[in-house]
Image 1 (cartoon, helix red, strand yellow):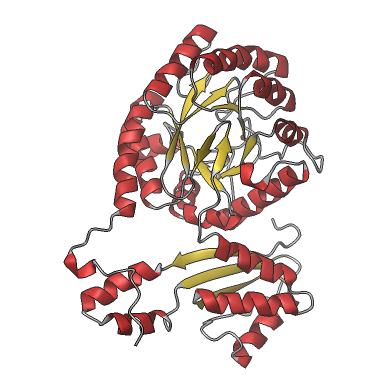
Image 2 (image 1 turned 60 degrees about the vertical axis):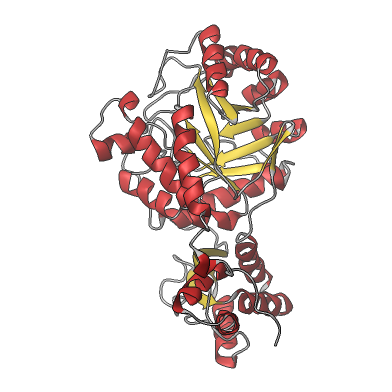
Length: 428
């Protein structure tokens, strides 16, 4: 189950100082007292995984020597079956304490990977830089953007065959743009469970004319949903500025996968998605020991290979792959823990629209009956702050749901009692 250990820091909880200040204000504490408590209370909990014995000894020495006070627990998980499972540690502290750990690890022999992992987690508390798609910049971490789906396929689970003719696909894409889609994702090969691949030539014949026509008639950035380097190259020439790869580069064993090289050569963006298996086999009893950790591991390795191929780090997105080699429970748990993907320091794209797990939850067998369930899922991930883009079939309805969810997440008007929240107390 586990490959070579890779040290990772996952943020399990992060109490923003402003949230704590709200509580202090409601308690009637003077601002100076609130500032004092903010300096004493732990704000962050991090789960460290992939640790070797030497990192465990280093962390224990820090705790015992009070070099970084405030860390609550370093479970000794490094004993026992060491060959099978890397060790873990649970850290609790304030940002400045974790920064002290980073500084100490950078200076200690053999601890640079630990320092880098914790630093990445701290960096992920701030949003990544904007993602540039063509001529447009998309701010990340501030709102939820909408990617509209244009399936130029005969057998997609949601609308297979409806838009197979280029004219119908172009008209549908323009309608989605008019409805408010921020990006259009054009795909020519179905990746529903049990689907079989088609040739690159056939896929190009489906998507390239649609991309060319859309590029001529809308300024909305275009994405191509493909796993093939040849299709990516042709689509990028036709006007796409983002490649959406459901394989997460896992089907090309080269250190610098051909699809990623095509993206790099075009100066475009790339989204890497997690899946277990292939569309033909992925829903045959998928199993995980820690679904979040294994998705993170897969995506981190995909990001490294994409960068090795020349894709700029700021031009990368990740997708947890909802419905791709996951049970209903796996999908729900990933959506619940979606903010942990922020540890990768990239924008996050999520696709739940009309998927089978929503049908299992609601009893809606037909994909086109799952609009309400889809809106519930996108609103939930937006309110939780875990997604930057949602990939949907029903754009206008999704935008309405997201307008409410995003506003709820950013709500600040709590009344006169909270007006000073976020303002530091004056110096004594």
